[in-house]
Image (cartoon, rainbow, N blue to C red; front, top):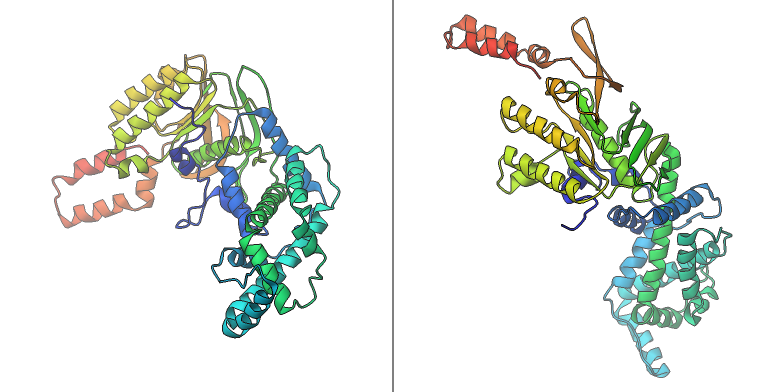
Length: 463
């Protein structure tokens, strides 16, 4: 079994990437890049987590430096960069020739016959010259050479600027109108010879844009950089955690020590799922070297994170809901069994079967993972489970606080110690006027002999 830090189901559960239909996703937090390429680069970076502490610290140092430095003003126009890419990738013919006299003749004819093409080329070459001058100013900025990733980026830029053609571009005044011959000469060089190298330059700019944006977002949103612990004993301690996609979020703190299982209870709408996703997002971001949505975080790097929140993918391929749940639980158990320091986040196990089976299966799973070497956070409505698992030494009981005032629930979205005893099933039925509708049907005499049992079942139901 090959180790996967986070599979596609986990990435979807945590909504790491942009969902264009829902207009949601963690990636959207970083949408305000200077360039589209920078945004695409962040998406690429989000796809490559690691548990290598040295690499993570180097990435952190780069983002910290760029977020605190005033020397790196990426004064590029997003529209100009998009046009430059379009120009470089275009299949508009060139006026290239090895013989000067033939080139001059072609150039004169080109302007007459392909006037629209020429205007497109002129704009593209002009924008590239301006871009080169802007990048030249940026590469001459002072920076801390101890920042390894930044040094690599600028070494690559400087190497390309050392080539004769790029030096020639720097001697051209970006404000001066280019002649016909110079425009078409530079065009043939840029698109036929130096396009791959120019794309390398753009790639370095995209990296700078991506890391600068990540740093800027971290400062604006109050993210912090986690501290990694190089220890065989796993631990995860996070303070003032919040979900980055929620405005004015309630912040919570939680810790997981080695081989610890957190049993999380609370009624519907109390914030359990949001908390689980926030924990998963923070873990994922930390393994990218990115800042995380909290005030402080200390952890031993995880080998893998797996979530059981939404099983729609497996349902879509023909599995029943319960079988999809079983398949996912199996994957999680195998990962915990085969690798050290795996985190499993599960939201309401075995919703696709009856309460008795769900109860027995959940108890069996919790008993097994409580003895394993992984860390587990599991939410459940099966409050009664707590009686059968409370003697397990590695179980910690947490609940989402819900206060009942005048028979109306008040959700604080705060994580507190203990087991929730709040039941909201009947309250929700009454709020949605299900009971009232039943009374109206009863009064009308429709199916009267069957409805008393239905009403009794509803009133005895839980959430």
